[in-house]
Length: 217
Image (cartoon, rainbow, N blue to C red; front, top):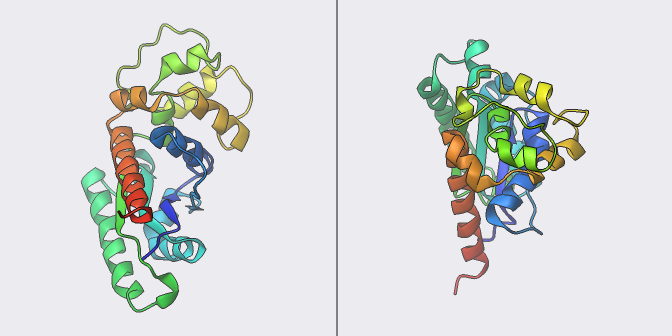
């Protein structure tokens, strides 16, 4: 059974959609492989229509692993879940339901080996400010007195990034997204964000497992 790509992502917004290819390449230190993504267009769409997002992703490509990412704070503010545990439970139930139905749909085969949930705490932008020194070094952020040992403790990381970014535009712009990611060190990021550390570990594991199926001997 051959999987065409290591990982397919289901994301809630443009930032993740634009950043993940570069970010994954930095994490696994490799390029040249496909990274299919589905932009659900909001946290609510991921939660309510996850079955559609999964089917769309599988019809485009056959990823070894699917990783679903959702901002925790968005789910809570939209009253979609009260906390991380409830959010994971809701998504897990949606995944199980989809898998049961997908077994009999040959168009979706091969089904992914794993479907993994990564909750972004508090938001995706928390990950982007988890290596402030990298952003400063590349001139994307002016030297600041702010010390961010735990990026997940910043309640509005998107506002912090917007107010401190020295280049015009936002991460919805693919070029801006790539510029920001190129300044970040994933190994530093995971020290300052527990949820990014999970993303890092799960992405690395999925990529290595995909490589093994390409060269099984």
